[in-house]
Image (cartoon, rainbow, N blue to C red; front, side, top):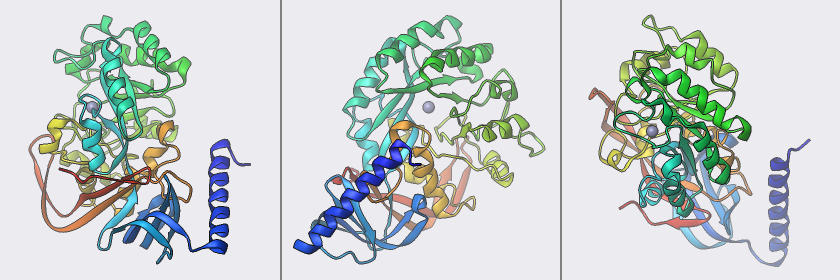
Length: 397
Ligand SMILES: [Zn+2]
C-alpha cells in the first residue's frame, strides 16, 4: 500500500513520465535548467556518480548521464558536487530579516528556527519565517520571553504552558514544535520541570520537543526519560557535566534507549558550550553517529566556528565519516525529522527542485570547536551554488 505522500510522488512522477513520452513524439525534451556533469551524491537514491540533473518548472525532471534535450539554462557543475538542497534543523535564521537569504546562498533550502522567541514575541520570528524564500518553520521557546541572558526559564513562571499553547494553536502552519533549553545557565534547577511543561504544550498538537542538552543540573539520564519518539536532542557533543557519554567512554544506556525508540540526535554546532573535539572523538569511536547535522546558525556565526553549513558538515569528514554519509545527515535524514521537509532532501524525479552545488577542496583547513581547540582537516566543502524550486539563487556575497 502506498501512503498518501508516496502516492502523490508516484502520481507526480507518472505525470512527468507521461509528459516526457509525448515530448519525445513531438519534439526533443526541453528543460528549464540542466545542472551538467557534476558528481551527484544523493543518499536517498544511493547515488554517487557523474550525472546531469534536469529540471522542468519547479521539479526534478530527470537524473542521468548526458541528458539530451534543450534547456533554457545550463549550470556547469563539472568538478563540483551536486546534492539535494541542504536542510538545517537548528538555526536562528528567523531572528534577523536577512537570515533566510544568507543561509540560502550557502545551499540551505529549508531551515528550522529553533527557539529564538517564546510566546511573547513569536510573531516576529513567524513573520520572518513566512517571508523566507525557502520553506521555514519555527520552534517556540518554552520560555515566554525567548532567549534571555539571565536564563530563559530561570524564573519557572516564564515556562508558561498556556501562553505557549495559545501561540501554537494560532500558528499551526508555521510552528513545528517547541524548544526547551536546559543548561544550568538557562534553566538552572528547573530543567526537569521545564521539559515536562514543554511536553505538556505540544502533546495535544502531536509536535516534537527539541532539547538543548549539556551542562544541566539534572542528570541527562533523568531528562532522557521524558523524551518521546520524534523528539530531538541538539548539542549532542556537549562536554560534561551531563554528556551523552561517561568518563569511561560508555554511552549512557538511557541515550541508547532513546535512539532505539525514535529520538533524534543532532549536532547543533553553535559557538559556546556545545562542541568539544575530544567528546566528538569519543562519541564517534563509540559508533554513535549524529542523525542530523545542524549549524545553530546566527549572523555572528558567519565569521567564527560555524561560517556556513557546508563547513559544519566538513568537520565530520575529518572524523572518518564517508562523504555520502555526511551529505545524508544534511539532506534525507533531516527530511524525516520535520513534516515540512518530507518531500525534500532528495533529487528523486518529481521532487521539488532544490539543489545545493558544493565544492570539495583539498588542502589544509582549520576547524575550531566551541572551546578554542583547533583541528586541521585535509578537506572542506564550500558552497558554490543553490537552486530553489528550479530557480538559481544569486551566489553568496
Ligand atoms: Zn540554538
